[in-house]
Image (cartoon, rainbow, N blue to C red; front, side, top):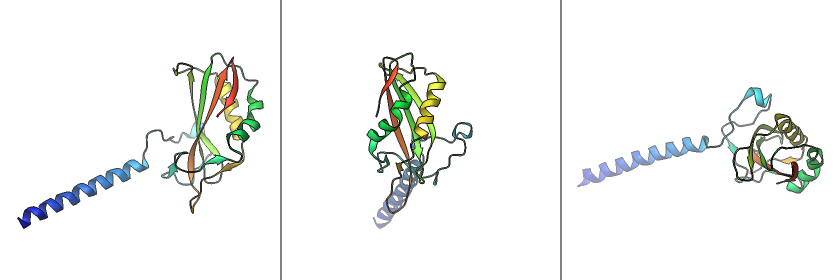
Length: 163
């Protein structure tokens, strides 16, 4: 009886160690992480490639919030013309120094189907976001890198809102 108990405890320990290792591996590689693309990202650097948190896990924000973002760049983008109505979503990283980079974009129409957007418009959006200089890097006894998302609402062929 004692050997069966020891065998059970040993098997439980092995399973627990395997699960712990698997969960540790998964915590470093999440669906949606933005891979480095030197051609797209230029010389943008994160502080810790293995610990880039999601925006909802930490308090990454812009000084003054989304209202301040809208106030600073919406005028710059109102002159852009789009062919369709929908959303352009910009996902990027705010590094530990408060710099934004590693931009990726996805565009959808009102039915949430992929929508083509002129690459010049995407570049203008990226340039406008790069003008934002008041990012608050998340802090919890240490400064971290974090993802951030901005959505650009397109109605009547113009950007009418940023959220």
